[in-house]
Amino acid sequence: MSIDLHESAPHDADAGHVAARAAPVARLIGVSRTYGDVHALADINLDVQAGEMLAIVGPSGSGKTTLLNLIGLLDKPSAGEIQVLGESTARLSPVEYAKRRQSSIGFVFQSYNLIPVLDAVDNVLLPLRLAGRTSHAQNARARELLDEVGLQGHHHKRPDQMSGGQRQRVAIARALITEPRLVIADEPTASLDTDNTRAAMQLFQRLNRTHGATFVFSTHDERALRYMSRSIRLCDGRLPDGEEL
Image (cartoon, rainbow, N blue to C red; front, top):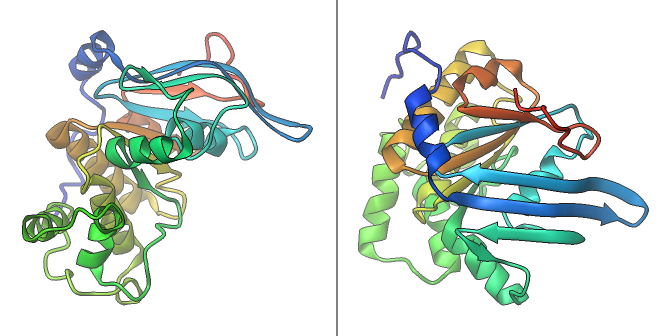
């Protein structure tokens, strides 16, 4: 699959208005996170709207990854409440917390976190296998997703046989295999040049439209912001009033 690098990049403004009218996919109410004496996040209030592409912007150490981990239910807040798909997670047991994460959220990690000994198809299927949900139909779906992200002919290649951009696309396909409502991507363009950043963000943008999933990114890459429907700036673990970009 070739991606038209001359495609109009900015997110559709009308889509952003539609997303704003829908119920939030995730809501953080007075959320704080501390690690010992370190206050990583303080009193965060944030709605993640259905269907949007939201960027969390800030320098290293501002708390972006901590905030992503909380939105993605990889961590729990020290104070405050997190709601996902309209339901509070405050009283969930660790097992229930993990199930909610597995069923509702996909992840594209900065280092991709692919299993070296598995080929592309098996890496994409990994979340389903961990949940005991694999089938012939899902195997076919993994292949379809790999084709959709432009990896025709790479189904049986291992990570060490692929480029960095190809490994990222495997990670994106893996994030979508469970049909999540929310996809979290940590610094997805950090190691990409300008052309590959454009191609990656156009791919995210197209998947946002075709799959109807909400995407939340952390980034300090100003090149990526023009593809977002909304961007907010995190400063010293806080979201100051008026910091929507």
